[in-house]
Image (cartoon, rainbow, N blue to C red; front, side, top):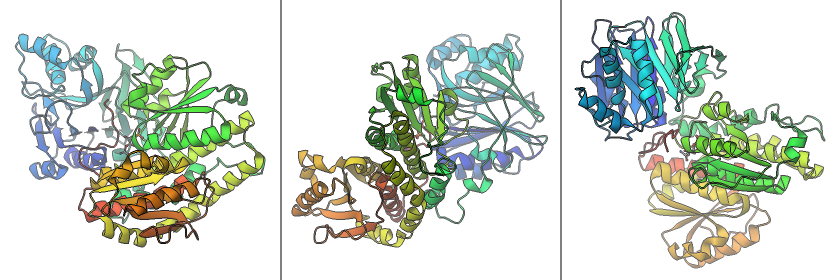
Length: 611
Ligand code: AGP
């Protein structure tokens, strides 16, 4: 969603802010803007609707000002026009602000301020903030105090950065909800919505906590709370290599991230697999065996792709740990007054760690007494800081809006977690555990092998690119992969697609099947194979065009499927990690052929920080 960048230092803020916004593009946006403070009592504000190039073309990228803030906006209140783009200003032009989040009481504040003679010029909720700061300063408050008091008047969620035209040595920022990270340099300080724009400049960062106000200067940052009390926040070191956030020769981030999966899974598993047979899985969980044994049920909450990971997780945990698991869309769970008996663990699965609904659902469960665990890719994100325990997936930065490596690494973590809980509960038999661990060890090599199948998938993409609908079918742990395959195709190629459990097909979707409908069938050699095969025979009998993904050497779909892809023979419970990769590639290549903006699909945002 919206992205914020800020800079105060000795270099051209315009250059750095434009580059910073570019690296935040992946979050999703539909307009952008920058305010530069040259220190002469006025701002140079440039805004543009549409892509960042429009903003770049309108401003001097070498502007000598060394202080500024920038923003990419994903419209919530008000259309994505230039007038509604951030930064927003007070009527006297002295205060500018950029904001991520929503001020829920903005209409009320707007009326109150208008009644006192203040003037507004946009439709946005954000404008209430600079106008309020300016109003409070007219009453005699300093910039710093007015900023703090204005925050006290705002209801809702925000990450905000604000400048005063007569104060060229200070950038004020605050967060309550959406993230903000400060990057520390030599004689320069950076601000951003996440670490990606900071990586090129520094790895020394401070994550702001909810309720923090930061006074940022060239020398660093002083943090206080909303009541003005000072607070120290730990400086952290970000381990990512700056090139982790570059395309590295690939055409798109999504393609690069698909190809990174063998390495990403290796990183996820690093130091988490026992060395000797019989050893306990060394997963960094702060729960003792006694506590794990006491778990009566598990609720998983997540959104989108992470929710699909949750469905595979349910399968794995119920099989291996014999513990009942419920999986909910976070946006539903948080409002349905969930029943949370004693002994419940809530697991929030989230790549970004900032998805508003997932965070709220976890909070709701914690308030009702559940223990909380986050499975997350972003170190220092809200999910990892608010949950009692967290397991990082270590996929590295995922920039493409369509989640790929974050998903497969979530599945690897869920496999380890299911085994770990099963160990504590004594429900996993040692041979089964060793078989799965061995399967996990071999996964990176299998994934490498799949990447080599790209030419075949490209031929499929060429052949099926013009279909207007797709159906994806799978059973057991492959059913969530059918859902994920359909979601991937929808979000980046805009082709309508649905995922179904293969057994459910004849209860409705079969009516859709005709000679124009590609049916992507996931049919590994597992306990469900025969059932899936008969479902596919039914589809073929109705002229459906079947694209089958099967275990190497399985000829069951000969004469039934139009196209077949053979995949390595792995443990059936690890098949989800493998079978999703060709589906990611298929969506990717269809989207490229259709000329879609793969990394930034229309209307989508990478991390959805509003409800
Ligand atoms: C995935 O391709 C999507 N873009 C989206 O569904 C995503 O998985 C969802 O918004 C959840 O995000 P999170 O994992 O960061 O919480």
